[in-house]
Image 1 (tube, rainbow, N blue to C red):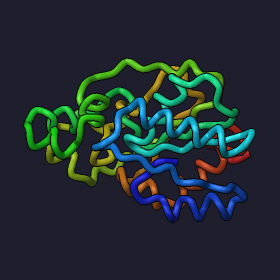
Image 2: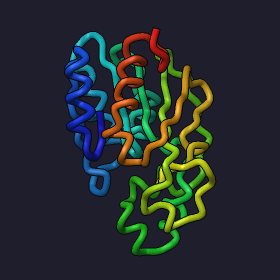
Image 3: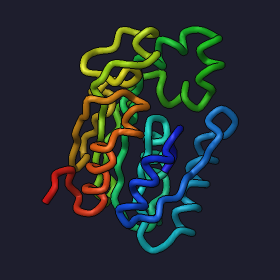
Image 4: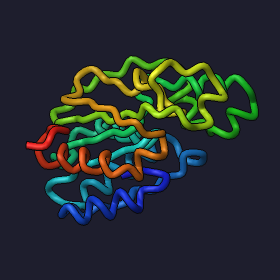
Length: 196
């Protein structure tokens, strides 16, 4: 899991019987190759089954890790607010030297241009987006509706995903939202966001 403020989400996952680990990375200092290799190594060392949750740029890193490493333990994947198709807010910010410095080279390379990714990995992927437009991204660019204030819902979509859902929450708010946590638990258990 690679998130900015995931303590409450991790607690909810632990309460549901999972053993969450935090994956930390330096998005402004490390290369994508270094970060994906480190995540792959942590997954291999964790156990025979590893579920992955990635938020925002962390979701993009999770995608790239699976795309680059075929020998990872099985498990399900949930990506939250992950701009897999690029991010209009990042594109706008990256037009300026100051914005590039704020984003860092990794975010600029992965988010500041449109992407045509596709999920072809043999593991179940669920996508969660937010639709409450509260965040600084809406001041940087014209964001299409719906959006979470930073990432547009259409930027989180990925052909090949098993399921997708959206909640009325902001980009950072999804890490705190109880319904998002519940849906994540449901998907990790069953491969569906719906209660069964």
